[in-house]
Length: 387
Image (tube, rainbow, N blue to C red):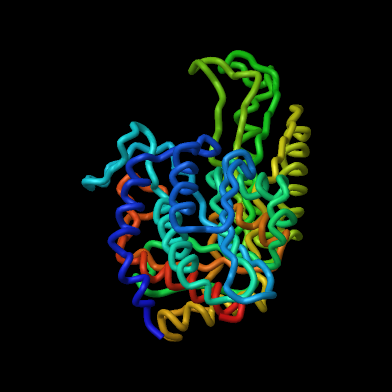
């Protein structure tokens, strides 16, 4: 079946919502105006229950089906923008200096709002649909905050589904895979302490820059010599701060970086090896290194059965040929991962066409994609709840 006629009919209205949200971006948990807009729209659609303040500024709307029985499934969209100055040149560009929806969360909200309107009108299912509008996806862990605030238990959610637009995938196409689809993301900081002195007499010093340089090189062997070559792992040192004058060997150097992994084994391996390399390399040259390793979002891991349900819903909208069911794991991170740790579900990617990349100042969500996302949500909800 193609895009729902009802979704196509509200495309202009959904575009208006999307562009309004695009013009008024807010960051992390400070999405009070965005959340208020979402809540007002949900109430105007006749959604049965609208709860604000879940996970600080999250919003949950609940729609009851017109048949008794059934379960509750959750459909999630993220609300926060990024601290980027927009350069898209669009008429609906951000009106807030230094902030923009550079990841398409405005489109994600518009699609879920569109689905809410249609589901509230038809109610062609048994059970309930929980519409989850989450703050602070961009590094704030808003998904975990909503879970910690009792999201799943309070609304009795049995399954949960997420969706993200993806530049480079054609509009009207979807991509997904069972198992890990997005990476865990960790951060580390290494402080190397040596013994500074005159650059003309290095033999009287312990040079933290030299030690740090060897740590950088040695960390590259974690992927090439310690990790399973068919199990993806990325270790990147992205910061190196040391020194203040051309003729002085400093006392200290500081390095920082990130790790992307898809398995608990590789995550543990990277942390263990970074610490060992830094500490032992420094010790071998008479210095000392300390490592702070911070685990952030876990990997986003799709549950096999629920992935099948997502594929079926996407295929009913786009056709089987337009659904890539073996998408290569993406090394970006996503805090929907916490929801998938809490409940079975699946995360799907939807085409944004030939747009600028995510997190780019020239990015803009493609409004032509709105009916596909709205239709996907409606079809998924109705099929999972016996519509």
